[in-house]
Structures are given as structure tokens and as C-alpha cells.
Length: 609
Image (cartoon, rainbow, N blue to C red; front, side):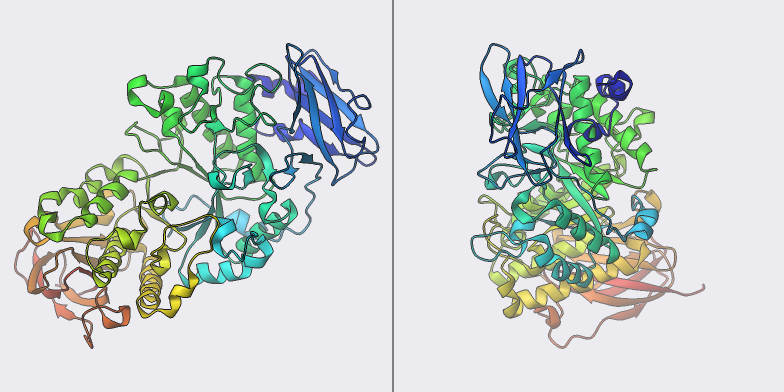
């Protein structure tokens, strides 16, 4: 193969290696290329040659790239590489760059051209951006169990219209899909991949996936995909010891073996860097995905995810390079999100300034602290008040997304509503207050499917969301509340503009531990809002709060209104004028009633002094 064509690949700077390797359909043939420098021999076997390894023997060049052109191969044919590994062992391998694959438990690669002339999202692609000053409300979903029927997974085209309607109803700006690259075991949810360029065959063809993305874009909804750049499955048909040597994994077993019984990518190796950067770019380029949420970044930053093992400098350099090159390719319009649980600094700082170059980082500290607080009996919450306020002490160190993700509703962890302390009614009351706190808190938002209806059963990838719960008053009311709350978030820039600036948020009283209350201001270009949250079982009448400006304070949301199945039956929205009395280090004061286990949002109508 031409050295000029592969130069960037071997230098670790290639983001389109899928144009070099894999099976490429030509007018009258299919061209196969695979990188396996230490293999002793490779043949292409498939449905086009009756799986005979003598018919299509590949030739190796001086770079370790094996090539073969097969005239009678065609799109839709299945194939594998029969590899004679270093040492003489013969093994059949899936194509690392395959564009489509057989449905599990089969694992052959499938020839696919990826031609698609139905894109109608040009306007969307030109206008999309990172969303720093826009409402970003992400709906995380597992495609296969969003609306599952029977034993089989539904296909993209069976859910896309209903999904779009659902997202619009709840003001979700983006759908984040759990990994769609091919994987062998349903229970891994896609986080243990075999086909980094192959869209999973569970939910339809790769062309159907393109239609799905196109439909979301036409409806004004972005799509983010989970991407796994740290580790891959051990299955022998995939990347493991591909040519008889650790071609993709670390050469020593200690570094190669991960905590998930998978193998860690050798992120120091230039060819592996090009492979993974190209895999990331593949979904952005071919499928028009708007962003990538990178999984398990803490396990890339530190060796085995343990700070005591030290920083993995090679992996960090890889992430800096990947984020820089992807941003350059798309003029900075895509979202690059790190799922990182460490305190490693500058994750969302530009790589040009020494950071890792991600746009956002999941705030797992906020999630853990807040949920830990709400599990406790309110009697004891006064001694854990800082669990709720601590997030604002570090918030401006990174650009954070507040996640209530799939990880929080599986494997005995209980769902978000069920984590709350107390009775059935108390749980829902606190969940409504929690969500008010979440959407009023600075930072972008992410919720896993089912959260919006107050699902009580933990997520199971083999079962559909419990949509029947809408027939029950408490869940129906919770969904109405969620829609109202997210509507307030989407319609008022106080809750999303300047999210990462000190100017948009101000505590009123962060220290009222004895009453379990929290109050703060969100400031917008046209309107300001006062948010009061009470995680106590006691309601407080005629409670006084300092406010920054003179005006009328009108209650636009109360989580205990009876329309949300709350305890304030027939209650009218509160409205009051501020009084020129200093309170909480502010020049004015309002006096309002605060519901037990509830939250209120007041819109400020400013008056001239």
C-alpha cells in the first residue's frame, strides 16, 4: 500500500483509517486491507468462496498491511480473516474495521458500502454547537429496552417517531444512546465491544441507523453516542492477540488485564491511537452523530483507574490528541464528554492549554453526594448539609454535566425515586424536590430513561421501560411535573446561559442546616429566579429570605401542588413584593411559605427603585 496513504496512521494522527482498512466495495469487486504485521499468513474466507482459505490469500507489504481484491464478493456477503498467527496457530478473526456484523451469537463480518443519499440535516449540522450557553437536557437511553416487545429488540424505525414526540414533550435536547458499536454479550450493554466500526445488528441495519439519526436531526434533536476507548473484549474472534502478538493490548499482562475481565488498549502505541481516533470519528463522520461520551476515562488517566498507580501519560497524550483532531475536523461543533470520577485537573480545559480537551465532564461527585443525602432520614440530614452545597465549591473548576444515569438504577442500587427516604408519597415528594434542585443547579443535565416517569423497578436491558405506570396517578403526576420543570429550564436562559460563569448563580442561604433548606438565585438576561428547597419533613410558614432586587416574586412552580400529587391542595401560586430589609446579606427580603419535602421557584419581576 502507498506509504503516503498510511503515513498518518503509523504516526498516530489518522482519524479516517476506515477509508484505508476494512472491506471496501468497488464497482466490480471488494478490496480488503488489514493490519497484522506479525501474522505468518492471512486469507479472506467468506460466503463468496465457501469459506475456503486457499482461494483468496492476502499479500503482505513492508508495513505489515495485508491486502486482497475479490471480484465475486459483494455487499451483504459474510467474511472473516483466517489468520496464521506468529507461532503457527490458526484462528478466524472478525475484521477490526468491519462496517457491519452478524447478529450475536454469530460473529462474522458483513460487507457493507455505507452509501446513504437520504441525509436531510444540512441545516442542523451547520447550526449545531457545543451548547455552553444553550439548554442541554440529555435523554440517556438503551435503544434495545426503551420500548421492548417480547424477546426481540425493536428496530430504530419502530421507535423513532414516538421517541421524538417523547423528547419534545419533556424538552430533551439530545438523545444519548448507550454504545451502538457491535458487541457479543447483551449484558455488557455495549461497553465491551468487538466491532468499533460496526453498528450493532440488534436494532436494524446501519442504513436504518442513519435514517434514525436523520429523523432526530430533522426534529431538532441532537444525538450523542457512548464510546469506549479504554478496553475491549477478550473473545478470540476479535482484537485479542490479533496476529499472535498483543497488537491492540498492552504487551505485559498486568497492564493489559482490566478490572472488567477485558483487555486494555495500549494507548501509547501510535497504530492503536489511529485505530481509536478513527473509530471515534467514524460515528461523527458516517453517522452524523453530534457528540461522544467517552466511557471510563478515569481508567485512562490513571493506571487501572487508581490514583496511587500514577498518571498514564501515554493515555493522557492520546486523549489530548484525539480531542484536538476531532475538534479541528468539525470546527468545534461537536460535544466531547468525559465520564470521569477522578479529581484529575483540567479535564475540560483545551488541549492547547495543557488540558485533556474534553468539552464536558460528568459530575459524579454531585450525583453521589446528593443521592447519599436524600437516602438519609431527615432527622440526620442537618449533619450532612454540606453534601448538597459542596458541589458549588468546585463547580467552576470544570464544565460539568449533572448525571442521573443508567449506572444509578441497576444491580441493587434502586431507582432514583426508590432511593429517596420514607414512604411512597415521601419518595415522590423528595424526587420532585431533587429534580428541581438538579435543573436549577448550574450545569447541563442528563437523565436515564424511566427517570421521567418515576420508575420504581431497576433497569433491566431485557425488559421495556414500565410505560404502564402512566396509568397510576402518582406516576402520571410525576411525568407532568417533569415536563413542566424541564419546560421552565428550556424557556429561561437564567438556567443555562453562563452556566460556567460565577455571574449566573448566587447563594441566598447555603447554611440553614437545622431546617434542611437551601436557597439561591439564578440570573438571566431578562429574568431572575429564586429557588427554595426544603428537604425537611417540616413545612415553614412566613419564612424570610434575602433577595437581591426590588420587585414582585411570583411562584411559577411548587413541587407540592396537588396537580403533582403533592400535599398543597387547592393552593394558589404565591406572590409577594420584596421589602427593603436586609436579610442574608442582601438588600431586600421576601416572606413566603415553604412546603415540607418540597421546592419552589419564584420568577422575579423587577421594579425600578
